[in-house]
Length: 244
Image (cartoon, rainbow, N blue to C red; front, side, top):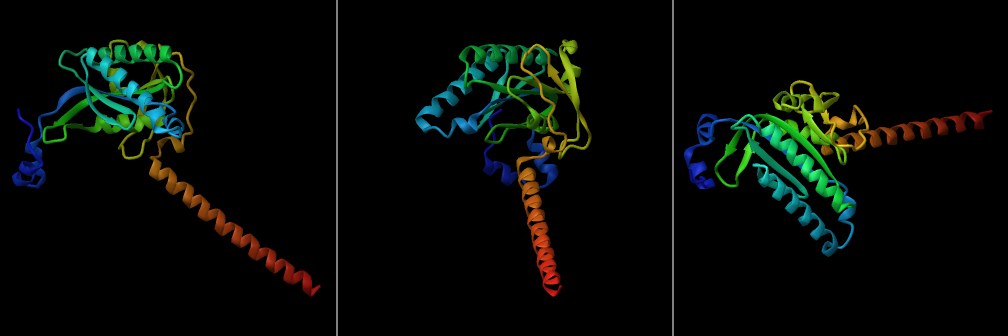
């Protein structure tokens, strides 16, 4: 099927019903996010230094994802979003193999090649009008779990663990009420990866970056008001002392 153009999409209509007809039927899929760690500090270097490192990372991830039967959907800066279509019931196993192979290669490459891995599973929809994308709760949930991901650690949702034939290879790390999701998500860690796991802050870990910034600003404003109240109290205290 040839991808539809945005023009075709608009002409078809903009009601929920007509847009739904534009989308392919859902299909069971494993979703994977692989994110290069420490890229913020890395990019303080000249572009000529950090760009080859990031591109090498993207190339390594793409090569192994493709080799294991997956498909790279897009690059999000220095993060790779990939999917494994579960047409044979073995997509979760292929994704696990992909994670293990990537971790082995990145360990050989050494600093600054360290990654965070997040896996999820569910029914997703392919967006066939350009640019190509996939949509679904599994993708959103995977992105939320990514907020508590740590270097060298692979995390997965309970939906992914239910699919994998290697359930004993995943340990529970906790249940989280992620913003934007209707119910708590039980998160698991792949035991085979040896990186240490540190329990994240229960409050900050479930916030998006925008929500975290807003919370910081709110606390700063609260601190400013309290400092003003304290200064007002000090002024009143000085006045009372002057009357003595």
